[in-house]
Image 1 (cartoon, rainbow, N blue to C red):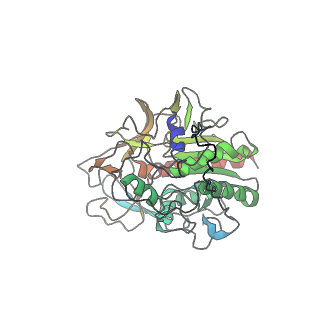
Image 2 (cartoon, one colour; image 1 turned 90 degrees about the vertical axis):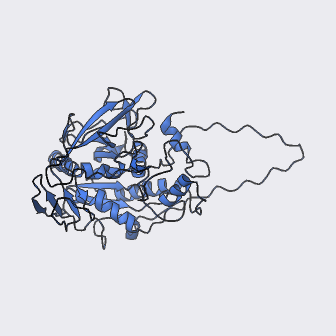
Image 3 (tube, rainbow, N blue to C red; image 1 turned 30 degrees about the horizontal axis):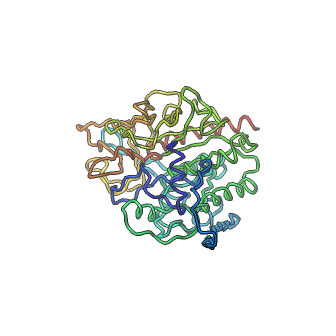
Length: 422
């Protein structure tokens, strides 16, 4: 069976993701952002063979399929980020300590742009720690932190819209992965799809007003935006509003050697930052730990090739990535104390799209110099048995590695969009 269809089919059994082959059970204790395929249409499922019964037998009653309740996105509290939202987690301190190769530092301040000419519509990855199968619509620290790391910096180029949605929770998935007991069922798998669709529809009807929009996501969020774009944007009137689609940490496909087709039928791959109406997609692995043959991210499938577009060099080749790392409490340079929430390490990270085996992925090289005072390796891998997991790579930092480069791309795309629609 097609690997990506299988990922969707795995969600159909009682609406839960059981033991799909690409999920390892032994990861670091830090909660990773797990890629869960949404309940996208996976084609017809063969019916089960009928069970012979005695003629007089009474059929067993069938449980009613739960109906997914709809979410009203006219209610501001159902949004994680939205213009005008009180205590907006996308309007926070993003100042950055730039740590240079000689160990010297400088502070880069951040300012958002509430009058940006385009919008960003974002769906976050699997982060919810709610102890149920489907999360609720109340943001916890995990949702607040992920938009700070993956999204808020784009507020210098776009107005940000990020709905809360009833995703398949990380707590439920980790219970399945570890072989533990099931967590309580809440809602249905259709909840996440309906929420993302309803948030998009509300945004178009109430906030878009002819503006260009970037649609982006990561991991489970990327699965959702691919489904959303395929059903509501690709080849539809809304495609005229698309500035770009950014699919991080999930596999988007095209026919080999082609720039369009596959996941999206009418939306080509971005080749330059001046191009609009196109898609960017990548999954990152470190250069010395390439993807395992069974790694889902960046895997070619069913005669099609995984898309890899290097945000630092959309036209191809290697380039220095403009990464923004969450500072945490680690040492970034000997004798230097970092007090800002983010750190940049110019020249330390090089990215390049490569084809190796059955994968097309973003190869990340850390240009370590043990002689200088700066950290040699800012990457945070998903770990298994004390080693970087080649099935997951640098999944946790897909957005961080590309963030500054994506800001540059959106800046150029926004300018082109504005010039083309005076």
